[in-house]
Amino acid sequence: MQAIILAAGRGSRLGSMTENQPKPLAKLAGKSLIEWQLASLAAAGVDSVHVVCGYCSEALQGYGDSRIMNTNWASSNMVRSLMCADAVLSAAPTLVCYGDIVYRPGIIRTLISSDAPLAISYDKEWWSLWSARFEDPLSDAESFRQQGGQLLTIGEQVQTREEIEGQYMGLLKFTPEGWQRVSAVLAGLSAEQINKLDMTSLLRLLLSHGVPIASIAISGGWVEVDNPSDITLYEQRVADLGWSHNWRTDT
Image 1 (cartoon, rainbow, N blue to C red):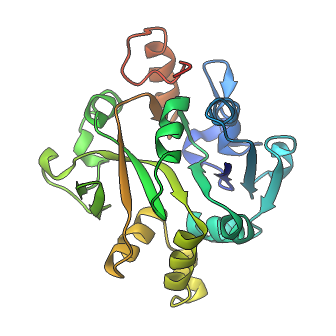
Image 2: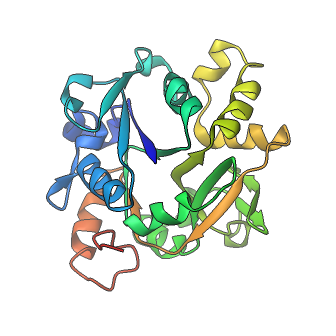
């Protein structure tokens, strides 16, 4: 199994932590985010990792098996970075991982086990994590509904917790067939439209075109890093081995 880590952005909300390095090199509990990811991917049986770079790309030299450049990282979004890895995605089943998350290996194994052309992971236990991160968890949350393991809605503004069955995590899996379906939809967009497209907007667009997206449920065992306060929170909580979102386990 191969994987792509999307690591082209700076992550400006981390302030000075990304002044001279991309967001995946920010430190969390003694390791950089990308080091945590590479360890979990290897433990889950992933044997080839490609890193899509942009901002301060030279700092990512030596991480993963190859670097793929998104030279337009400053004026484009994550979908453009994904398209830069077209050759990888077209060749074999591929995991796609955001660069600002860490997770247990078991989460990756569960996603790998899906044989759907396109699948995403979501966290059923998201509320406890978002409640710790945000005074008003709904202010940052978006809709997520699925039925029978198939995604129905994602990425819309919500008014109530009941509109959210889980939190999309930034983990996806494509087969070459699945990526071909995505590419066909993207072919109908202009370069400007693609540059503005974020991943949840792409998923909504795919649903509107009738492209099925499998939703794979997990329960905790991961975190995303968006602000310095996230790092402070996680480094406090990770000492508790019973914490629901502790990513530092071998399972």
